[in-house]
Amino acid sequence: MEGVLDRINRRVNLFGTEEPIIQLFGEDRVIVQLPGASGSISEVEFAEATDAAAVEGIVAGQGFDDFAVESQSETSYEIRTTSLNVNQQNALRGALSSGIGSVNSFQTTGGIETAKALIGQTAQLVFKERTCSDVTCFTFTDAEIGLTGDDLESAFASTDPNTGEWEVNIAFNDRGTGIFSDLTQRIVGVETKRIGVFLDDDLLIAPVSLAWIRDGRSSITGNFSREEARTLSIQLEAGSLPVPLELIQESDVDALLGEESLKKSLLAGIIGLGLVLLFMIAYYRMAGVVAAFALLFYAVVVLAVFKLVPVTLGLSGIGAFILSVGLAVDANILIFERMKEEIRIGRTLASSMEVGFSRAWPAIRDGNFSTIITCLVLLWLGSRTADDLVTGFAFTLFIGVVVSMFTAIVVSRNLLQLMAWIGLGRSLNLFSPEGTPTLTAGGRPGGAGQPRNV
Image (cartoon, rainbow, N blue to C red; front, side):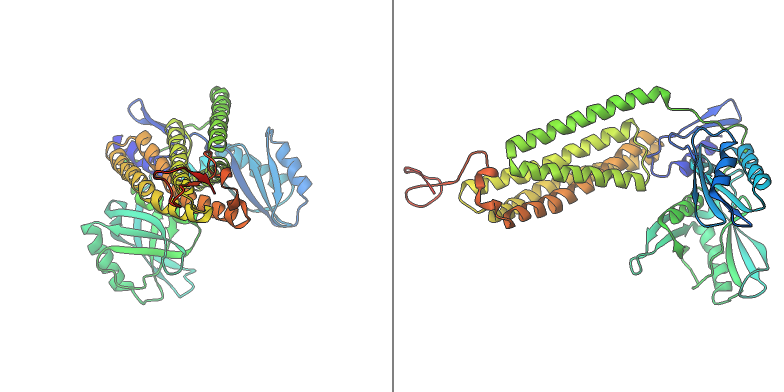
């Protein structure tokens, strides 16, 4: 049962950012709670052209409180509803079929359904040798070769450095390397041979072999989207569950308890961000305005990355995000303080900006690299101790630190260059609260003598 908990967690929480609750219930049951995994998307294709109003009427008759129907074509529709269990899916399909006409296909995806597909039932991952009757492979036979998910050491999604397309990289252990080597040597160059990869007896993918792979390391290529490559890598990486699973019950729980806390957290975040922006603008003037735009840009980019990964912002994730905001502000402060020093000794804005950035960069680089190293250590520690809070915090902070370096060096720099280009560089008092620079009577900055304004 401990193996079951570990495998389920690896399937639904690859990066440690989803914060699921997976725990034993009794001796032979497991409870899986997935925050945010709600909503279903049902893609329906009818045999004949159908009016959207008719589809909406049928869906409304099923008693859904909130739903949307979007037409993809005259025969295809996308129906968004709350999470549907198996009985509700069958009821909706039956209602559409009896009320409108023959349904060619009906497929439901979404948070709960995606998680169930990743967990699987028995979750047995098996590799087979597929022999096709011809190159089209409409008819085929599959043969066992003794290669399973237990022989797979790792699988992860990445992009091909040459084409930029998504692919899934795999690596086998010693036993799997030998079997896979024999298989690829036997089928390479044979048009009617494939490698069938099955999860719960369902075919995941059946690629051809383009080379004899001796070291057990290869990549699966195709027209993958980022999400498709990520899902396939999770299904391969998690291997096989040690015992079969049977779904007993599933239900949705509304986030009523957390709604008030969420509102207060958002309000506190807005107030805190506003105070930081107000201080930056008041103290650094136009440079503070640049920092404010860079910080807002940083927040938008980070939240977009969180959505793409995806990252569920729980307590550890919010803490890491707030910490990364502080690091982003700190980088701008280092840059602006260096700029002020250069403006005081008489440099122009453009010159002060270039020198200030070059002198502030080592401190920014070293500080952020130290934080990145800390994140990597925490990621390693979290993976060893199976502590999702540690892993989620480290992964979220890593994203924030990398983006903060980008915004400080690229966004802030280009905005300051723009200000210098449009002529604001002539008003140096807009960038330095101390006012205009001074020179001594001898014409050198600083030193003894009566200063005069220039």
